[in-house]
Image (cartoon, rainbow, N blue to C red; front, side, top):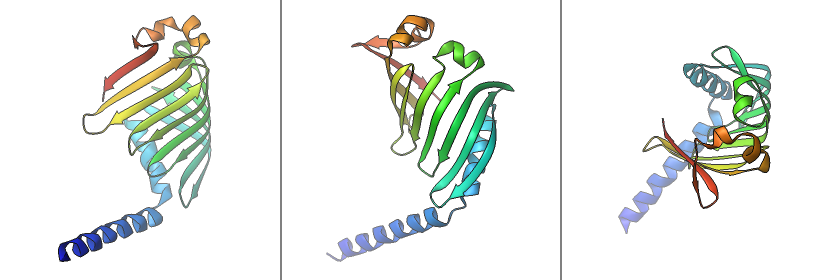
Length: 169
């Protein structure tokens, strides 16, 4: 029985340590780390306003650039330790030729590793496996997507009326 008390004590200590780390980590560093990770993937980020809060960092009116060409404008991005949430995304350039231009929301949860998005393309749900370094996306396309973007749908496998895409990173 003493081992159960020790295990509970150790678990309590770990939970308190994680909670204090989350509470006191610099949210500005969190935003800077996200921007740096994007730049390593050749994605540039320009924004009008950035604010830090106790739970994360918000960026307003962001433009995403891929190899110096604008691919999307995002009204609001919220970055926290376990989640990235984007709202009001408008695709431009090459991205707009692959998907309908308006995406209402997109959420990436780092743990347990999920992706959800909704837009003119339909709805997208996905899973990220950090262990196998893979992503599995399931798309329920809108009529607009089926009618005007069939070339993009060819990258997905059609199973039971849903389009599935699997990739490694």
